[in-house]
Length: 481
Image (cartoon, rainbow, N blue to C red; front, top):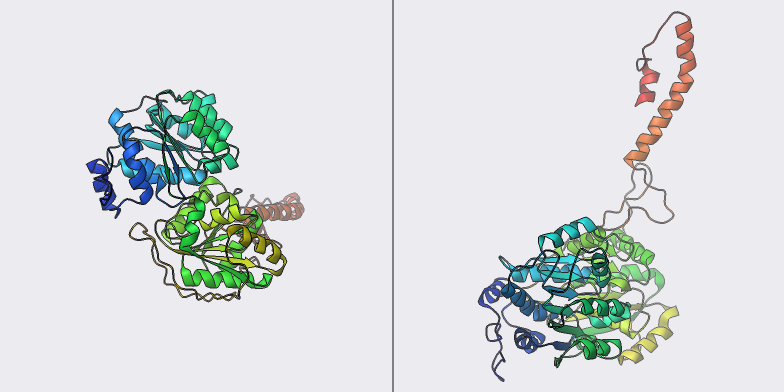
């Protein structure tokens, strides 16, 4: 079904089923984005498709609507044999795509499940045995499940490769090829990528048949919707500057070069009065999920992340991106900055440049074709235009003093940090004593005390005075506590 040229596109005119149109309208999604208007008719017609589009452009709905409609029309999947497959590069992206497809399928649509590392095998195996209709997976975990005989891809009717360029950067394409070879040759194949060259083009040539091609710009397309600032700061001023930016703009992502750096900056922002959470590769999956939920709900105002998380975090309503540590190259800059100015919104991107990084940042500006030079910090930047009704973030009206505040001391002298996902102990500080450790120390103290009092007890016994254990008197009672 082709949309009439020149007419205003709606989900109904694009051919989206009525129940899904009503579900979208109930969520405040009335009009399709350009990538959705361009691709949905071809996908509903069953054509293979190759799309070049930036993150935050609405790709998930663009492939999700046809995928849910196709799988739902074909009936329930057999155990261990999904009928739809979405391959993504990161755990966070898998979880978010899964949630979006589940919303599209309510209330009686296909069963959607996510499969990625860091989560228990038994739960995923049990879901496959019950019959998952659409599997959203990272290539590595899906390959493990196949090798254990837990899943069979021969019934898959539609495959989506989301962020194929990122999967190429992470070395996943050989595994992706093996997974595609396991699917039926009659499948419909969809590929979205920010670039369509190199290894990605090999996938297109080998696995897509006469694909429809749609190009609305790569990841650098969003740079035009953001204000970019490069501020010259001293190393000791970065935390205070970042805190003022978060306080002024609201939901902010802060990018650091290392995992330890992300943890440290998160703690320092907490100390400056900014609720924050850290997310990086050393965090468990439950910690990463909890940090993302806290950021999305507004419980924390700053999400501090490393580059590993840059492409996997998809949250509408991020007003500001701070490059606390400048990125290694222009690609990382584009990926990081793509967390703001999403879904039609505008954004602010600020790079904090210490004197030692001036030369590297000048090369970065040249590669990005951005104006060169550094300016003095100005946290009072104009407020950005937020994405409309899709963001359900609660507003945070707390007044915050961005200057560092005194740390609250606990009785044992350790410092407690209460930020979601932040470690409780700063490097170099005394380790906080846990209740279990305290109990162990008391137990040992009691044993030592009993040894010292044992001689006296035996002496009393020999004198004809017998004492029942646990009733030695005040000193015995204090030793047993």
